[in-house]
Each structure stands twice: as structure tokens, then as C-alpha cells.
Image 1 (cartoon, rainbow over the protein chains, first blue to last red):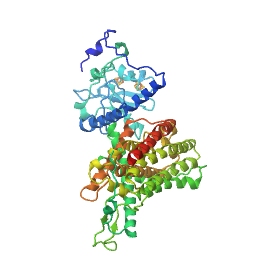
Image 2: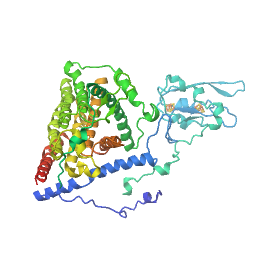
Image 3: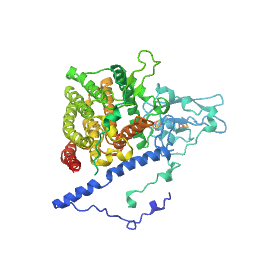
Image 4: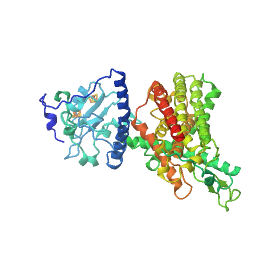
Amino acid sequence: MGLEQFKNRNVGQQKYVKLELGQTPETPMGKFSQVLRRTFKPELIIGLWVTMREMINALFKGQMHTVKYPFEKLPISPRYRAIHEMLRLLESGHYRCIGCGLCEKICISNCITMDTRYDENQRKEVSEYTINFGRCIFCGYCAEVCPELAIVHGPRYENASEQRASFSLFEDMLTPIDKLNLQQEYDGFGAVSPNADENIKKTPLAY
Amino acid sequence: MEVVTYTNVETFVQHLPEVTAAGVWIKAIIILAVISAVAGFGTYLERKVLAFMQRRLGPMHVGPYGLLQIIADGIKLFTKEDIVPQNANRLIFMLAPAITAATAFIALAAVPVFPNFTIPQWVPVLGGTFVPSIAADLNIGILFVLGMMAAGLYGPLLAGMAQANKWGIIGAARTAVQFLSYEVVTGLSILAPIMLVGSLSFVDFNAAQAGGISHWLIWQQPVAFILFLIAGFAETNRTPFDLLEHEAEVVSGYATEYSGMRWGMFFIGEYANMITISIIAAVVFLGGYSEEGIGWLTIILKVGFFFFLMLWIRAAWPHVRPDQLMWLCWKVLMPIAVINVVITGIVMMV
Ligand code: SF4
Ligand code: SF4
């Protein structure tokens, strides 16, 4: 479906249809004929046909709507802010975080705890990094402030876990080294979803 | 309209072997076992059909295509704690579901379920026993079945009043309203075909319509058929007349406080009633069964169609209010039924 008709905002050029609601009958004869008309209107049969049609559509035309959730998942918007991920450099595989501490500083619920030290090459390395997801409000400030695109929000929205710690340590959030080639770059906060065009709907302004 | 008199009824039934007590016992056990199983399967069908009509999948994960869901539900129902609320009338509360289930199965005693057959000789003890298609072929079969199904309404009525719950009380009141409304229509609507056939026995009805689709009573009595169908929906508490347990208004009506197997008995009773009404409609209006060939397949198809119709209508139509039900039954359906009976009588006389 093209988007042209949605983009036509010139009010007054659309086709308005006035509903024929008829008159409320005044006379007994009029009321009687209305009862007759309504009785023999095939509305109930039409209702039956509608449900039957949906059943045929679902069974034979592949229009079943069920998503078998734990086995199938709908794509989520790239703007979605779920459990954080720490990304790695694609070339070296080293983690991107430079230990600048900006995320810890900006976090409005004070849930990032980190510590750094100098390694043997006098490079700063992250010795400890945890996010307390019991406090995190998923505001996204940490990902926004990170100068290295090191901490980002991932697509993992299933937060149920036996232990809170199981996804809050640095190693848990870090891209596994063997999955480096699968690492998704984060589009950032202004990103539109890949199917954004399909999601455009008429707003009331267009009527 | 040509009025047919049926004189060959005796010739139709005479060649059947003698019905023994053992045969009736076996039949009763078969009915109990098969109809309970079918009622359980009916819940699965209902969930599946409703799901398809809403473009969902329905139960999928227990067994192939969710077929074993019934067993899972059964285990759940059986192992649930049997709770009796504090201020409830214990005895009546515990008895009421049994009334619903028992009357539903008693009603099935007088309707034809499955063909006649004789147990083969090689079976020990029971070999050679003739098992009739109707456990009790009463000469007032239709009255008996309708009476039993009407008595079944005591289940919801007593359950609602015994459970010390306001939703239950409302459900019970609605039971009374519903009972008073549709029962007249059921009786009057089925009176016209009874006048035509001149008998209250299902076997006679079946014999009267033997001889192809053109002999079916639905062509002579279309109005009675529709009225009976409407009343049948009310009788089995199906949408659009399921105001006894309409979740959106009265939580679960008469079944609010029930859980576990007692609730399951209400459910089995309701599904058994659906099957009974389907069988009555098939036998009285749609030609019933025939003994030879694939005759029994046809009635299974007819019953299946009515069963599907009930699910279909549940998916499609909204509920009515109790006052609308009373209005419909007393001011619309009953006059039509009376007029139908009178016209049938006049046509028969002329
Ligand atoms: S999303 Fe917000 S609350 Fe959560 S860690 Fe980042 S800055 Fe802190
Ligand atoms: S803002 Fe980025 S680079 Fe700086 S400490 Fe946080 S994650 Fe590491």
C-alpha cells in the first residue's frame, strides 16, 4: 500500500459519506413496519458469515494471528530500552568501555557501580562494572552519554530471572567473544524501526 | 399442505430382537462413558473453534494440536481442592452439580445414541446380548427428555442459592427467569411436529421421516424448527442466552463459588445437554438416523452440525439481557409458537 493517500492533508477534498440513519417511527404502523424490517434483516446471518469468513481466512489463507511467544518473537523497535549490553571493538575484540565513568555519573538512579585501574600497559581497564537492575529505570541516559558506544540497550526484554546478578555483571552484559561477528550496532535514540513506513497510520488531522 | 398419516410405524420396529436388562445396562454404561468423553472433547472443540474464529490457534502445546489438553484439564479438575464456602448450605451446595450432571445423563437414556448392535457370541458372559440404540424407548420419550432437561435447571438454581454469594443469587434468579421464559416455547414449538407425527416416541419420529430429505419435518415445520432451536439454546445456557453465568455481568453466576470437580460436573452437564438438544433437533426435524448403511453417520453429522452451530453462534452473537430474554420468549416466540400450532391443527383438520 502506498502512502500517498495518507499524506493528503488537504481537508475538504476527501469523500464524506452521510449515514442514512432514518427516522424514529411515530405511528404504531411505522413502529410495526420497523419491527418487521429489523426482524427480517439478515444481520444475524451476516454476523455468522463474518466469523466464518475469519475462520476460513485463519485456517486456509494463513492469516492466523497467534505468535507462539516463547518460540516466536515479534521484532521490537531499535529504540526499545531493554537490558543493557556492553559492546566490543570489532577489530580487536577488546571491550569498548574506556572506563571514563560518565555512565556512572549520569545514572539518575545511581545503579551503575564501577571501578577502574591501570593495567600493565598503563591503560585504564575496567576492574568492576555492575548495574543494579533492581534500581535501573531504563531511562537510557547511560547509553546516550557513553562516548564510545560501549554501553547500549539490547533487545533482551525478558527480565525474569532467578537471580538479579545473572545479567548485571560486566561479563554477562559483554558480547561473548565467539559471537563477535553477530554483534549488532546500536542505531541510537533517534533510530526509526525498519518497518516504520508500514506503521504509519492516518492521524485525525488527515480527515 | 399434504398431511401424512403414519401407519407403518409398527412394521418398522417389529423385527428388532428383544431388549434385555443386560443390554440396557451395557447401553447405559456406553452412554455414560462415551458422552462424558465426548463432552470433554466438546470443551476442546469449543476452544479450538472459538479460537479459529478469532484467528487464534487455541490449545496447541499439550499433545498433538493440543489434543491432550482435555486430559490435562481433567487431571487439574480432579486434583483441585474441594472448597465449600463458609456460609454455604453444605448439603445443597455439594449436591447441586450432581443434579445437573445426573439429569443430563438421565435425559440421554431416552434419546437414540449409537446404532443397535448385538454383542458377538465369542465374547464371554455377555455374548449374544442385544444392545438397543435407545436405553429406554419410552412411548413419551420427548416429554421425558424435555422434562429431565427442565429438571436439570434445579442444579444452577440450588447451586446459586446455596453458595451465600451475591453473584450466585443473581445467577439463580436468572435461572428462574430463563426457565420460566423458554420452557413454554420449547413445549409449544415441538407440539406441532408431535401433532403431525402423532407420537411422542423418538422411534416413531424417525420412522415417520424415513425416506429421504424431502420427508424431513423441517420442510413442514420450519417455524417450529427455528423456535425449538432458539429455545434449545436457552435450555443449554448457550450464547446468546447464557445469562446464568455471564462473566461480564455476574462473575460466573451460579458457578461463582464452585471449583474443581463440582464445577466440572456443571460443565459436563452443560455439554451433555448440548448433545441431547442436538440429537433431539436432528431426530425430530432433520430425519434422524436410519438403521442400514451409513445411516448412523448421517445423524452424527447432523448432531455435529448443531454442535458446531452452537459454537459458531457463541463466536458471532452478543448476549441478550434477562429482560430481553423474557420479552423475546413471552411476547414474540410464544405467540408465534401458538399460531404455528393452530395453523398446523387447521391444516391437519382440512
Ligand atoms: S538506563 Fe538509566 S537508570 Fe539504568 S543504568 Fe542507565 S542511566 Fe542508570
Ligand atoms: S560511559 Fe561508556 S565508556 Fe564511559 S564508563 Fe560508561 S560504558 Fe564505559
